Image 1 (cartoon, rainbow, N blue to C red):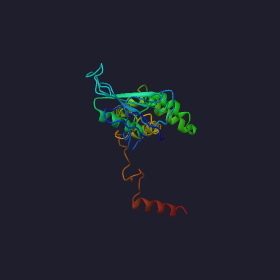
Image 2: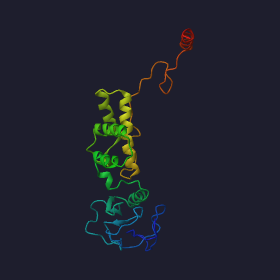
Image 3: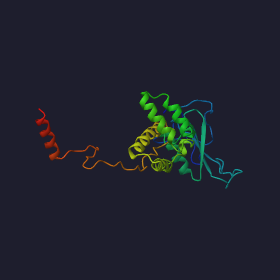
Image 4: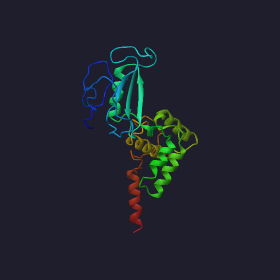
Length: 236
């Protein structure tokens, strides 16, 4: 975060100062003096809040009383100006704080799942077997044409159910799901989406062999071990 002061359009006070992610509204100034949108800036820098109903001196604007009053404006990672409108100024401020913390999806979140996976996967240092497994999982999803920021847990759950109805074995479903989860977590790390939507998805249980431990390994009974040892002794 640099020390350049960005303006916040507000009816309160006439002050200027640097905006920071921890305390973004220390500095306020009247007027909307925002750097040119062609200027590349640190994406963590905050934007400003515009009052769309009243001017600085309280005079009503033409759209007074129509639509949402406050508009938060900022610049995303690609240098493009973005905005979001809110009924209350508090909500607009909170939104800019989320932007500063990287918790608001950027333009990459508008890519469909299939497009993001295609671009992301080519840079992964996978062995051929992993490439096949990842492609199989990514190509089997039922939400490949949905934008990343619009994908919800319900989409993942519906995909799991579709695999179960084929039917695929629970172990195969888990493998494909974990591979797709890796894609979604990569989208989170890339700030394409704000959080991992795979967290609360329920998967079918993998049936463990009778007498198996938590890892699915079957533990032989004492009598079975004894019989095995006796048979080995007889053969020597």
